[in-house]
Image (cartoon, rainbow, N blue to C red):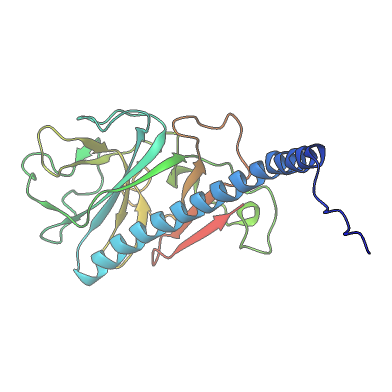
Length: 258
């Protein structure tokens, strides 16, 4: 009579070894997944900003009017306050347009001009809802470090005009500003980083160079962004940064990602 063969099974030690190997692999792989998620988020944010610029430009051309896009960076660690608390981690954008199609001001401007201040409290209309992007920081990048071609990478992108960059530094003597809600004496947001689109689709970052007498359109303007962890801004420039550029003539928008 043949004896039945003993049943095979894992011992407790073998199970513990397998569990230990799985835990080690998870520790090693987790940073890679974190980096991929962060890279995806900043790319999505860049396309959201591109969409805001495209909306403003299209509205200006379709309605034969002027539009303005405002950028504000809010402390993401704070609840939404009135007025908003400035700080890193949340980029807020607003689009407004001239109700009667005029520019509301006359060049040259000798000083600051609030688009929705008296007597223009009703001269602007809100084109769309506020757009808010968390875990994002406006960043002013230095000029490209490599010589093109190609022109489709961050490091070989066209060099933006230094006075036409929207980032964490103050633009060259900005003159224009507006509020949200528009014309409100106690606004939640005051936008001082402003991009203007004309009825012809021309785009320009508000600065004293453009608003001076006889000024010409800036060829290339740029909005720079980098990811954050909440309100914590990276101490050094991370690998996954994005530059959103648009041309003065035509206002065509293009994204350059590292």
